Image (cartoon, rainbow, N blue to C red; front, side, top):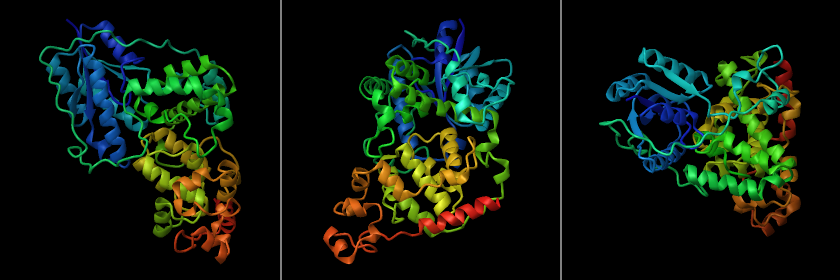
Length: 465
């Protein structure tokens, strides 16, 4: 009887998972396995909130596997040591997993493959929609600009969505192990986040079907409205509790311009995955070589602390940063606004913002987060003149939160500030501040920088670089 191990990482589902489907089809017995890697849990992007969400998703995955006769085995340790031990324990003939794109993940998988010797590691699609190794220019080079990538990505033929196995038989004597807690993994209590999406494949599919059925058609018109939460499916894509290909299939079936726009957003995730596949160094340094070590960054802990706390005096920036802390999520338009403020108003290194996002975002994904920060910092792919990504926070608030719903939700001290002053509350007269019950400098901070002046500084520094 043949036996396979299915090594789960960030593909925590049973539906449309080629690694699981093929392992179950070609083998008599299958051991699903998740390995808690201390290097990731304690690395530069450790996150209590994301770890707690992942643990919930793993418990839900175990329930899905139990319903099919299987279980999810868990281990803790370096994968290159754990996988050979498990393979020997169950007499596995192969290890199946979903292929990754980051330099860290690929190096890890290569170490596991070397440690397993004659036992093959079979890598499958499943993390992304397209076959990223084949989304190339006509002369075989990877894309560095999104628009032509999107055209090729859109035309690429998709693999079929695969069904979940109806039954899974575990190897006899397989040790399942005990699911850890955040505390046993080195984290304090997980943050109690507002409106936290349920961490399971079943709930992910319900949310996706609901979104596609009732909201996606209007996505092109409403996606930049800050007070609207959009689909909130990003955490499910991050951990693979939702198949991105399954989601794209349903979005395409819905049709219409809104579906086309939403599909292009799914393509951005693939694009940033492809960037790290072909340029793994971009995970730690500027994609644009001309900016490596040439941009001048300030060292201002007080400004960084004010940005993190949502106390910069710019309402749309502060609302977004407070939303991040309370929800573990932030609207994509808000992500661009606060990133621009950190990099081009406060002149702080984009990597500081990248790390803060990865600490708090439930959907924190190395590729998408890094790509988004470098896009705003003008150091990444899709190059554009730096002054085109130098956002005026007051104008952004006026365009994307014209009625003030977003700002007033997250900054209640501005609730009674009139619309005409909400973008720049420091311009209120003393009488207006009294009437609004918001004294600048007491109830809400004044602006920590002058945007117009800092815009000029940013332009000078980018020109110099």
